[in-house]
Structures are given as C-alpha cells and as structure tokens.
Image (cartoon, rainbow, N blue to C red):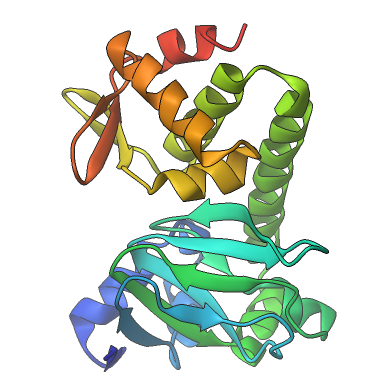
Amino acid sequence: MEDWHNLRDPSVSASIRTAPFFEGLPDAVVERAIAHVVLRSHPANQVILLENDWGTSVYFILNGWVKIRTYNLDGKEVTLNILGKGELFGEMAPLDEVPRSTDVITLAPTVIGNMPAQDFVQLLNTEPQSGIRLSQLMARRLRQVNRRLRLRESDSTSRVADILLFLAEGQGKRSEKGTEIPNLPHRELSSLSGLARETVTRVLSKLEKKGLIVRDREVLCIPDAHALERMMI
C-alpha cells in the first residue's frame, strides 16, 4: 500500500527541491510550483501510469527506478526507457493535451512527487528557465535514443555495453569501486537492447569474467566506464 506526504512537511519540500529540474530557479518560483505537490511511496512492480490515461499530473522521481513501456503490434512488451532519481516523466501529455502514449511501472520501491499538470504548465509559461530545463532533458533523451538506434545492427556485446553505459550516464552513482546502477532483471535489459534474454545473460557473464562489471544481488558496478565503452569499438 502506498504512503503519501504533503509538502507542508519541510523535509518533504526539501526533497522535491533536489530535483535537477528546479536547480537555478528562484526560490519564490519553486515554492509556488511545488505548493500542491504530494509525495507518494510506491512498492516495486506497481503501475503508476497507464497508456491512454489523461495527463492530470507530472511526476518527479525522488528515489527509486521506473520503466517506461509500451507494446508492439504482436502485444509484446517493449521497454522504452528506465528513469531514476532526479528524472521526471508524464510531462508530454499535459503539454499536448492528449492521452498518455506509454505505461510507467516501478522497478524498485520508489518515492514520487506528483505535481498537478496545470501547475507544471503554468511554471513553463511564466519562468523561461524551466522551459530551457525541459528542453535540455528532451535533447538528452533524444541523443540517448539515437545512439541506441545506431547500435541496433551492432554485435550483442556492444548493445549490452551501451545499455549499461546508458543507465550509468543517466542515473549511475559514483563510488570508490566505480559507477553503480541497480542490477536489473535480465528481461529489462533484454527489452531495452532488443536482444533475447539468454543472449543478455551470456554477454553479462562475459563482461563479468573480463572484470568490466561486478555484480551482487542489488547492484551492478562498472569499475571503468571507458574500458566498457572500448568494447563497443
């Protein structure tokens, strides 16, 4: 069962302010923008949004991971993206005033800030810097998608390495051991890379034997991102 918290709690207000989207915006502007935000805690594997829902909210990830998914003509699930702390989603439907085109489901226990869509649109209309922030986010996602499309004809090792680097660049945490990302189920990496799950499992084992990744139950660590990137050349 999900828990929710109102931003009247100062600690909750501070949490939503850490989202990169709000960095550099005047304090007064941010206070108005987040006045009606509600934080909710969701368990893993909970659907947050469904395709064809109307865009009544925009969502900020304060902690955890979600996947953006759709289905192909054969009814097979396709993972379009995986987002983590600091990212936002659900921003396109309020802007286009059309139903949502994808589903969003949590991959881990996740804390999300729900902002009413009208407050988000009002912020974009009144604060130019927020529009620039959103444009930067969209540009980064487009570059990532373009890179993945270019690698669709590459060998399986390059494609799996690219997905790991994609996740590390977007949401990786730096540690003494390298860059850490969640050790996602192989089916998620399979859907992202367009490879069979068995192929993903085989490639991950190969990368692990070479010391290019280190895995435990919860975390996948990339000790040297440049070394992993050289596998794609």
